[in-house]
Every structure is written in structure tokens, then in C-alpha cells.
Image (cartoon, rainbow, N blue to C red):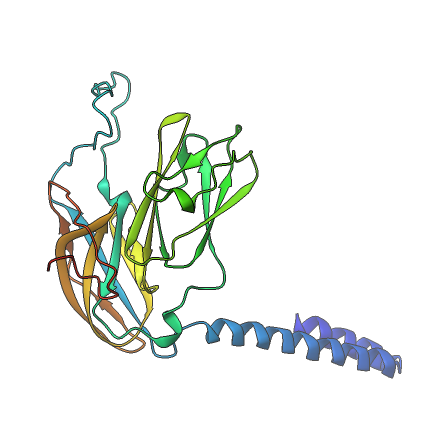
Length: 271
């Protein structure tokens, strides 16, 4: 882009057009100032000496799909195409606890999270956020939906949500999770989980995760499943501006999350 300005400057200078030259120089200066402000903003929101924690979550075996109600018909093999095996890691969040939380990370971010509702299911079944963050649920389906939460009725507006519109929900209490259901759909369910800081991550289809901007120090890596903690943990020592690989966490065959307390450390009740 600066080469274009240089070419225009030479052409206009040969014509003696000093006004055009001045204008081009001004535009170049403004562009440089704009780029500088963008870069400065991006750097300002990142931890100056934060490190990165990488790792993976493995399966101990073939887990069974959870049954929400005894009224559901038992699943049968598909004679045409093999049914995709159930993977509970779509409900897993890896969280760092018991470490030095940065002061600037103790409050929720100004910009909220976006969560799309795609007909009979959410974009992803569990969305993790920092406590106090607004979650914008956008109805991208073709019909109105009536969302509600049996765990926290006051959090979800009961008014029908039309296609294309957005509704915000917010969890103020850290280490709390609520289910969001739909009055006219027995299968639609989404879970919102809130944490006291931003050092957490969902896992991808391969079970990998990455948490950036972690303050240097000793941390405990914990696994949040659906609405509570699993017992699996590991330790990691985070170095400034470096990536650290944590030991692989293996999910048990029987997934039974424990109720969480409101402590920022992530300790279980009665622990």
C-alpha cells in the first residue's frame, strides 16, 4: 500500500503538484496512525508476560450416551450409516485454578459472548464464560422458541424469541452452571458455565485445548464436566511468554460431576 503512495507522490511531484504531495503525505500519516492504534489496542488487552498452557483430554473407553428421561426409546444401530459415537468432551471445560490471577482478569470483559441457536440445538452444547459476561443467544432457526432455565428461572426471559433476534443471559455467580431448555422441544438443551477468571478452554474434536495469557506461576489443571468438577487434575508450572504442555487428563468411564463451591480456587464442597 505504501508503494502506491510512493508512485503517486513521484507522478504528482513531476507535475509540480505540491498540494497533491502534501495530501498524500497526510493520508499516509493517518494510515500509519490508524495501524498503530489498532496494534496498541491489541497488545493492551493481552497479558504482558502471560504464558500458554496446552494439553489434551482423553477418553478411558467408549462412554454411554446420557439419558435425560426414562421415556426415551433405546437407541438402535443405523443399518445405512454407522452412528457417530458419543463424545462427552463436548461438555468438557479445562480450567486453571489455585494460581496467581491477574488483577485485570478478575472482572468480566466488556464484550459479551455469542451463542447461536440452530433450530433444535445450540451451536455447541456448553458455553463457558467468565462470571458477569453477557451471552447473546441468537435464534438462527425458522420458528419462535420459548427458552427457560429450571435451575435459574430469573436468568432467562420467558418471552418467545423470534427468528433472527437476540436475547442476552448473564450468570453473575462464578463456578455455577445452568441448563437452558425449550418449552416445546424435549431434545433442546444448552449449558452455561461461569468461571471467576478467563483461564479456561473448551476442547476440540481431538480433545486438544489451549489457554493463552496465563500469569506465570504454579497452577492446577481441572476438568469441568457439564455442571460440576470431575476428580481428574494435574499440575503445571507456567513460564512467562512460553508454551507449557500439561499432562494428558483422562476422563473416567462413569462421569459424575461434583457440586462446586463459589470459591475462586475451584475447590469442591467439603474438600
